[in-house]
Length: 305
Image 1 (cartoon, rainbow, N blue to C red):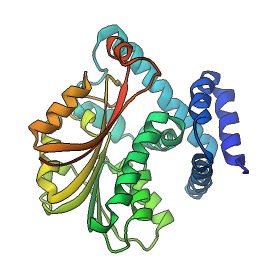
Image 2: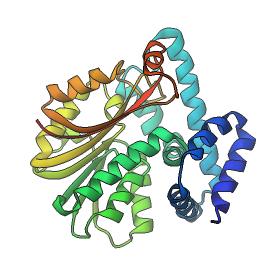
Image 3: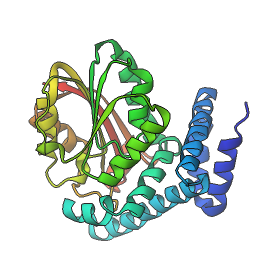
């Protein structure tokens, strides 16, 4: 199989950041041909989208590396202080979400991480498999914080054409990125985009499927968001929720210290876990992960309790 786009991206990436090679190669060693076919196809579409919007694949890789570097700096501060570098959502809004160059770079780089980080790829597959499994029952779909647009694009690929789709984001820059991606790939698809805080919206409380990927760690009170999710779900509805433990970043505000803290918060908000992925970013025994406060990525499919 010809993986020329993958090869180009990896060569460019390793030349810029040689320390990235070991972890990526370890992840890729365990992947089958289907993964590489999917990644190659993504890169073709990703590059075409970037070019159409006056960006290049090199910009995309540099954006990814900037995101990695920002996370590394945040991790250093976290290891020294035990605290996240951002304390208020308003600071993240001001310094990241409403800063167009910063947010654009963040979203473009984050999209690449879905295929370069084993944890992000596993969570992505967690969502995809659930959408495929429940396709027949999904007539209404809401995504909160669509960001890079990849989850939303994937949902359009999988679900029926007549599904009512809504995307909501507090960041107008992020929403513009998501909307531009959907309009590029699906110019005739009707998706309603709303630039607003989900907590301020009065929405239909009978939604079949809700996606909220890596959002609750960005707010000071995630319980408010989770209560909103519980209220929006239909009696048989499901939600895909992802977040992280001990994961400092330039816009992470709420610090989950253990997976049980996440589970307990879900339960407090009337949400029942159907399935979950617990994905440490390092290949170490869980006892070491916990003792050393190493980041754990987490995703779950939840229903009304």
